[in-house]
Image (cartoon, rainbow, N blue to C red; front, side, top):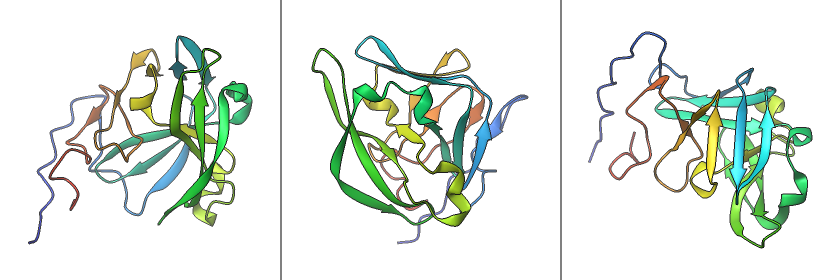
Amino acid sequence: MFLRPPKPDPASPGQESVWDYPRPAVAEMTSKTLEVHFDGKCLAKTKNGVRTLETSHPPTYYFPPDDIDMTMLVQVAGQSLCEWKGQASYYDVVSENGKRAARSAWTYLQPTAPFEILKGFIAFMPGEMDKCIVDGEIARPQEGGFYGGWITSDLAGPFKGPPGTRGW
């Protein structure tokens, strides 16, 4: 069965449509203030992040290690392969209270050439964190459990992730 992508939602002034994002994906610097909170603590905060953009997906944000409390990350075994970015390595996020979010952070130690900007930067699965914030706005996690996108009010969808969107 052939699945057609949905009709993009109209973008309001000041919004980006995820349907205008490219395929294949791209990565670019962002000066937005990005924050990740876990178990009541600010785990990461930066104005030097990188975002990845791909058609139908909200951005995934990556943080430089210097702007992350690396004591809360525990590298774990196992990797995955992204067709655009290359091989990802994973971390568990662990608080001083022992709360653990398994494989909820990842990095590309040797990304493909077009994604060299991501080398060593770390992304977080927003649905596993207390909250993820973009310029003061709490982001909603991209649905689907596999994707790491952050949905904010400056984006127009619909977004890939919910049931029935796999074929987009």
